[in-house]
Length: 381
Ligand code: MCA
Ligand code: AMP
Image (cartoon, rainbow, N blue to C red; front, side, top):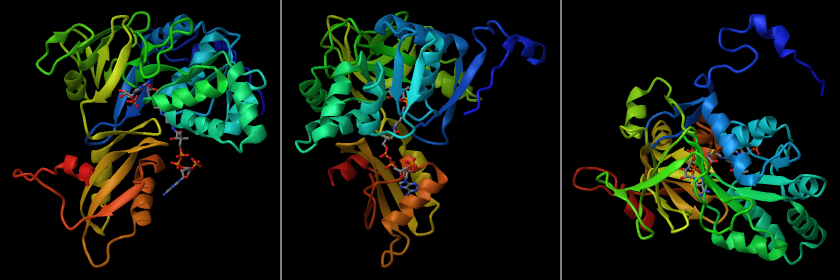
């Protein structure tokens, strides 16, 4: 690639007020990252410079992240994980990044085996690494991967829960523990296992420096103690400044005193380690680490001429964590659209990762007396 050297100081006179060289205002928006809700179009989370700096510096503290680190990953660069942690992180520390372009176990082995020090990934990627490590016939590929993972300084998983089974398979093959951290587009990073801390598979570690975290009951009661299960709320310099042009959604997501409602349900043990046990909204699906709103897909399916009614659910999937499943009543039951046609329709209008991986055709959707679709009984089916 051609290398372009930019003289930021020389360009200063052309920069708009507040965006020249040196530090722009801490509250100035740095990025607007879109995130799916349960209904309607995605919302733009406005992330100020302050939040990005605070979150990356908290990770520096937790992981001893320095300019000597060489980060390896294959994350998409349009989300917090790949863009903020995966690109701005190395830039802020003065370190470097080797992006694989497309995820592969072979690419991970190559880059961690030749100087990479840290690996960031979503659970689907670690699951795929565990599959290679497990393969008895893996031979050279398996051994090269095991050696590369063993050499790395830090293996970090986030964006969704890494199943304990995958944790254990990687530990058995490499003697190394993957550590988890818990974040969200609106809050950036909330908790994480420290590099010098005790890894505990299934937990996401204690709150990062500067982050306050509490559990709250449905009625607003703040819960205490290791037995408590409640909604995780967070407060700190890592939080976004609001949803773009959506004061209603911003207000709905915040408590009066600055606490943000994550919608995740968790517990906190005696050492402050947080475990995520579920999520309040059943209409949010996490597939391959991507957050996907069921309502958004239902609306697009309903726009297909072959579909009369549609409901979308998330079902457990060993590779993707959850997979998008569509339940469809065809406009003409005698000639329903093909499942691939519906998947292509969603992939074309929204994004390929939002396409249904399974389509079930039904004569009618189960509804309660108020006409609301009973999604839980679809799961049972
Ligand atoms: C397949 N493809 C299609 C179709 N079917 N394209 C169009 N129409 C179709 N019907 C294409 C896809 O575009 C893709 O192409 C290729 O086929 C494979 O697609 P897919 O099967 O979906 O990919 P995969 O291999 O299953 O992906 C697994 C993955 C991916 C690599 C783990 O899910 C991934 O990158 N996840 C990362 C998500 C993430 O970064 N989340 C962070 C959110 P092509 O290969 O050319 O693209 S931030 C967050 O959660 C917070 C802050 C946090 O805590 O981190
Ligand atoms: P997003 O809105 O795409 O940024 O996704 C944020 C959500 O991902 C959180 O609210 C959690 O539900 C989930 N998440 C992120 N990291 C983890 C983790 N380590 N374990 C479990 N869930 C996670």
